Length: 363
Image 1 (cartoon, rainbow, N blue to C red):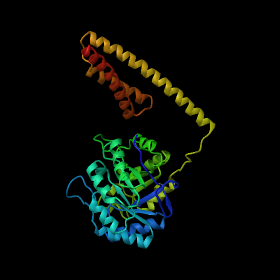
Image 2 (tube, rainbow, N blue to C red; image 1 turned 45 degrees about the vertical axis):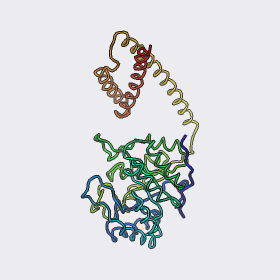
Image 3 (tube, rainbow, N blue to C red; image 1 turned 180 degrees about the vertical axis):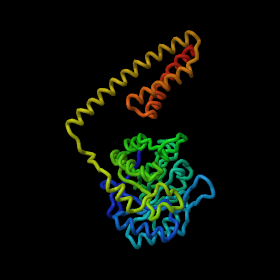
Image 4 (cartoon, rainbow, N blue to C red; image 1 turned 135 degrees about the vertical axis):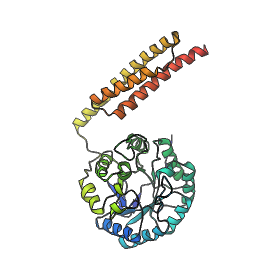
C-alpha cells in the first residue's frame, strides 16, 4: 500500500486543512511588470493571500508565448514586498526550482505535462531536497491515477512533507464543453487513499471558459476539495495566454467566490442516513444482478466453445453498447457513464469466456 508522510500546509494566515476554500489567484502568465502589479494589488485588496503567475509556460507548439522567464521573478518578489501575499509559480526543471528559490517564491507547483514524466519529476524532487516549502502537483494530462501518485511519492521521498494536489482535468480527443474533462472520480479516489492530502481544483483549466468557473468551483466545494486555483488578470481579454479562461479580480469575487455555497462536511441528519441505507441496499442488489449476468455470460462462453465460435462478436457488442446508452439516456444517466459501465461489464464477460477457452487448451 502506498504511504505518504504528510504535514499540514500552513502559511501565516492560510491553513489548507482548516479554511475552505483556500484561494490561489493570479494571471496565467506574468507578462509585464505593470500587469503583474496591477492584478496583484487588486487581488490583495479583496483578501487573496496567495498570488500565482506563470513564469515559464510549457506550450504545445513552439512559437507561442512560453513565459517571460526569470525576469518575472523580480516582479513576484515585488508583489510579496508590496502586498504581503505569498507567491507561487510552476516549475518544470531543476533550474526553475533554483531560480524560484533565489527570488523567494513561497510555493511551487508541478504542471500536468511535467507530472506525466517521472524523470522530470525526479529532477525537480532532487532539486528540492532539503527545502521545506509547500509543493502542489497537478494531475498528469491523461487520467493515470498511479502516475499521479508516483509523482507525489517522488516529491515526498525527497523529504518534502507539505504536499497537495491540483485537479486540472484530463485531455480528451472527444468534443465536450470542457477544455479538459473533470473525471471527478479520479481526484475523489486520490482523496480516499490519502485523506490528509489537500486537493485544489483548477476550474480555469478544466473549463477553459470564464462562464464555467463558478459551476466547476461549486462542484469542487461540494466534493469537499480544500481550495481553488483560479486565473485572474487585470485585463483578461488582452492576456498573452489563455485569455478566455481568465477573469478580472472584481469578477473573481462578484461572479465566483461570493456565489459559492460552502456546505458543512460533518452535517448529517437521520433522513440522509436513511437514504444512505437505501443506497447500500441497492448496491447489494446491483452486484447480485451483475453476478447473475456473469453466470449467463459463462453459459454463453460454454456454448461458443462447444460450437467453435469466437469469443468477441463485434456486431453484437456494438448493438448492446448503442442500445444501453440510449436506454441510460432515457433513464436520466449520462452517455459517458453508461458507456464506461457497459465497457467494464463487457470486459469482465470477455475475460470469463476467454478463461473458458484457455482452460480447454490446457486440458
